[in-house]
Length: 377
Image 1 (spheres, rainbow, N blue to C red):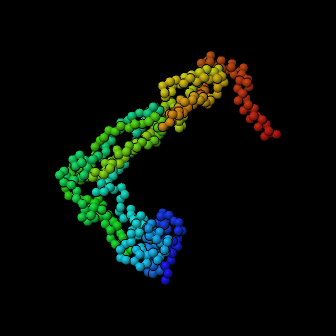
Image 2: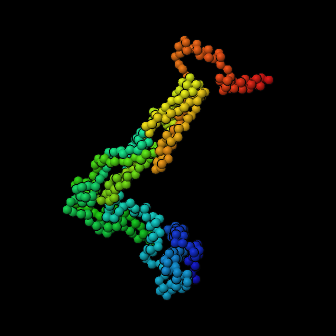
Image 3: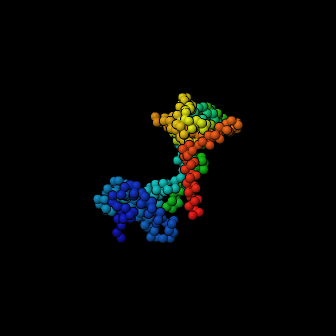
């Protein structure tokens, strides 16, 4: 029976890339795998054909020979990638390592010799709005696992050293052959570390690290916002048995300010003014975060809620030379606890007021009267 074209078997074109070949093989191998099709001889035969096709096409030299001579390139001992035999084919091992490696106990975060990377740590740091404006250098103190000085982080008692695990030969994993599958699991003798410590260090109980309080300096740049994260590489938890340390992440929170509210790079401030000042006009000064005073001029007839913009008096933009603006909202304050004379003056003012004095109120009530008059007709 003539063999099918390898490209047709995998469902790819002759110009397929290595990644496309691998993806197509993974899909085809899983569909016709004997474990998914128990007792199906056709599926088993196709599984072998698919594996043979991928072994040839995934090898640059074999693929070139196949493209030129076809199946004849591997006949008569030509070195084809036959899918039979008792051993687990290398292409299948690669594919199923990709698919199931993590499920079988392989830890990508583990270094050789049982050295494991330390965990990343988080520290919450609260700063003021002034600190966020100017930037600061803060000192944080926290308990952190560091390398054991007694054993230099190896976990073994001084004068001794870990030995290579005899069960897994230092790989940290053992593999058992079961039909078409190679089942890989964590070595039970060393727990996947690849090494065994016969004489653990008494100071760290064989972990290679101890807990101590450390003081770290953190540079907070100007312009940081609430929720900004600062990464200190290698300042996290020490690794097991001399492994690399994790990272420390500083999460910043900015405390509410009594006068300013922040929106991105802009600042907002509400300033109460008297109704006399609002009516006649005037000016006032507002202290800003850069230490200077911002002067605001109020025109005659200023209404409550009016905003005044002062350029470049807001927050600096992180890692930029840009600066936001300061917006000041005038809030007209109604006088309280009036004296008899003040009341008389206000009543006199009210009696001589006109629509020109209160144009917005006059216009509103005029429109309201017209609306209800139209409803009654």
